[in-house]
Structure formats: C-alpha cells, structure tokens
Image (cartoon, rainbow, N blue to C red; front, side, top):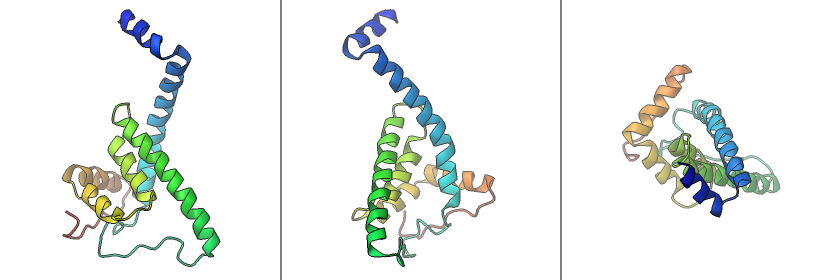
Length: 144
C-alpha cells in the first residue's frame, strides 16, 4: 500500500490529493443534502412528456438570458460532479440527472424521461418522495 501511495505521489502532489479528498467528502455530503431537497420539490408531473414546461416565461428577456446562463452553469457543475461521483462516493446518477435537468439542449426532456423511466431510478426517486409525503412521479407511456 505504501508503494502505491509513493507511486501516486510521483504524479500528483500530496496537497492536490488532500484537496481532492476534501472536495470528495464535501461533494458526498452536499449530494446527500441537495439531491433529496431538489427531487422532493419537483412537481409530480415534471418528467411527463405530455406536460409542457416553461422557465421564467413571464420575466423580462434580459433576466431570462441571465437566468439561463446561471442555470446552465449550475447544471454543468452538477453534471461534472455526478460523473465524478460514479468513481467517488456520492449519488452519481441522481446528481447527473439534476445536472441534465438544469442544462438546456435539444432532446433534453426525452433523455431525462429515459433516465427517470428506468425502474431502479424511478423507484429510488419515488421512495425518497414518499418519505417526505410527496406524490410519486407521473410518467407518460412514451417516457419508457
């Protein structure tokens, strides 16, 4: 084990390793708090393809552009963190799903619906929502 640590230290300084460890712990704890908080606040029909979604529809166009930039930036952070959590401690798939939900790109709703339509993901989300007395997510048959 000591040889492995020495080998890794040849390529990555110990300060960087300590920083990555601390960031991983903070990300893990943050995901344990943020992911349930976000998922229980979603409307039950959020991933239903039959229901249109509008974001900041009645706001000034400048506010919409600023909001979209911030929303996409936050989504990118969640997406990257979720990808890293596939290899580090954390809720990788759910974090990536939140990131995808924030980012705007063509075909986003269909991708979200496919991810949420997977039995294990949907079960995990609905179990979490049930603990907070929230209704289960509603999916259209086109989601799956």
